[in-house]
Length: 169
Image (tube, rainbow, N blue to C red; front, side):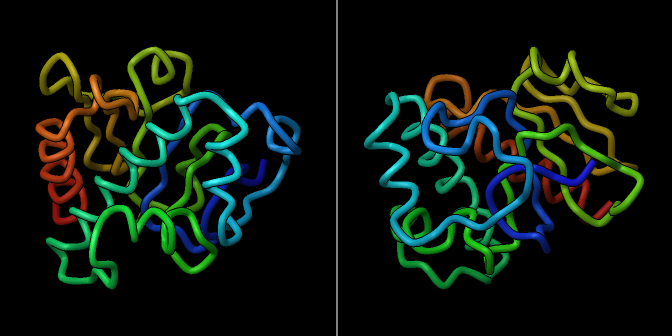
């Protein structure tokens, strides 16, 4: 099964989420494609506040990650969200399909939430605390759901540390 979701086909950071935007062709899409300019604003405008939170949290996380890597072309996380997030050139993807570990072990795989992770066929995980689990060999991290309360700024910082630990193992 090919990856299904939004973002780059050359992604090196894959986020996996159990739900899809309930509008347009997202519920039935069966491919991986980059977002078009303005598509995030369209999704947010025509769905609940939930998708605004998801995009904002991932934009904050990735802006901070790339700032630490000194690879950030954006001036703020808002600019990163609007210009880079899940674009064809971004090297990140938001996937609605289950992770596959047989094809690419170079990507970091971040699962959104314990509940979703429990429903997936994942390699053995080590729980680091009540919020995060990790498998360094397969570069898998189970993280809180991308919501301000669950994946707070403090937990974003923790997740960035864990991303570094699986990348530079």
